[in-house]
Image 1 (cartoon, one colour):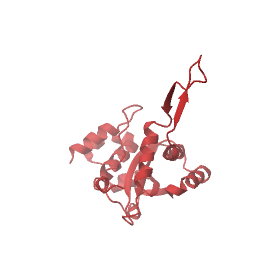
Image 2 (cartoon, rainbow, N blue to C red):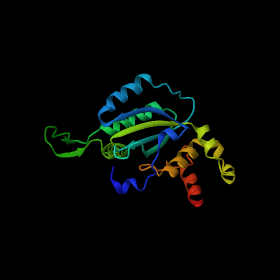
Image 3 (cartoon, one colour):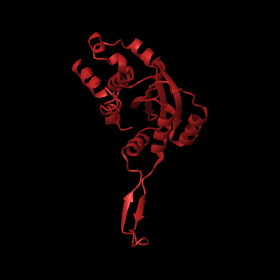
Length: 198
């Protein structure tokens, strides 16, 4: 990981964070076995929205990890598998013809140039080792008490958004961006409240 980038993130010792549970740990070389293990063995229910975090380290800092991304999902398994797939998707040129000229290479475009694949490949370039964790919402809120004035802003109805935004804010998660305010997401509003408190 680039030294200047590391300075912007908080160093973390994951064993000290008692509100997280490791879902999988892998290296650049073991992504395929991690995908298989998650597909075959991960048993996290889809009964509620859950919060996850992806941590990475480059091998130079020993026990310290950096938070790369934080997210929330009703199906962590599907989201993690999709993101692991994005880490591995390399862009390649695809040539296309046209209706009347099917065999002609008229133009080319790059596959896998979507934002997610670029972002997760960037993580793969920065780090050597990764750990995907679930953040237990109740334990996190217990350890990081909600400010009283934020409770009135219906945060209790959107605790997963609060935990995602607060954890990303506190760790300075390198690749995190708040979700757009669709489907009831409150991450942007929560982030603005957190920034006011500094």
